[in-house]
Length: 108
Image 1 (spheres, one colour):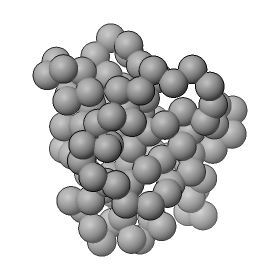
Image 2 (cartoon, one colour):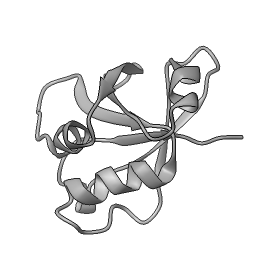
Image 3 (cartoon, rainbow, N blue to C red):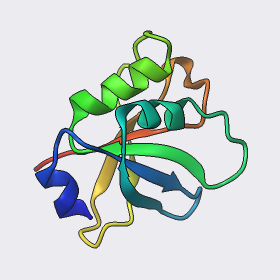
């Protein structure tokens, strides 16, 4: 999945975070769905998240999920579930009002 995302930098994908476990990346979703997932106030696990190839698109999703307010000033990192053992950087909504993450790949 990592290579598919890297080759399609303008696309968005479903992601699921299981606290204390991993980040799982699913199929392609629309931008609007990515925003809805990050806005979700879902209390159970897994958390519904979004994933994209680049920082700009991830910030765009987090900003839209924050009703136009800037997301956290710098993205956080979490260990992902990729075979490469990559760290998946991500944004939270402004003030971390939801549990959603807008993940992206930090290219080397």
